[in-house]
Image (cartoon, rainbow, N blue to C red):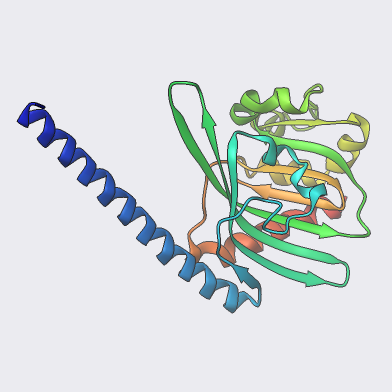
Length: 224
């Protein structure tokens, strides 16, 4: 027969775990409703369900990006979308699980993805130095630095399939702009630009301002 003390510990631990799960689910439901209201105010369509990237309707050219190659159990949630004649804008929350064998943790972030059908963006991946050091092996290539802006090179690691094309894409306005705004991750290729802060989910009430900011970033990249 199990020791009463051990049994009590197991029961209490199980009760605490259930309570934590219930509170977490309630918080996520509340967040989804707030995101739904924000999407309505912004004139965006909304899908709050948690789905795999492909099941959520993300294009295969988008899910080929480095962001979607991390960890396991990937999920897209609270997807906001707007279509236009020249492409589409998307904002969504993306999560995945990183396992180290003995432990695991979940990474979540708010992501913006912009598609412009006339764009010809060179394949590149930019991330903060400390983040890129962990995932650089997925993208390969040599870090692209700018002698004209040491601050940018100290904040970011930038890599691409064609370094000359990537350097030309970032020269002038983009380098100066991002040098003054550390902490962002940006990927691009073909028709797509993807922007986010690694491991950071934006609050629903801050989403409008955040979306304005990432749109400004895309305009800076387009104004080279």
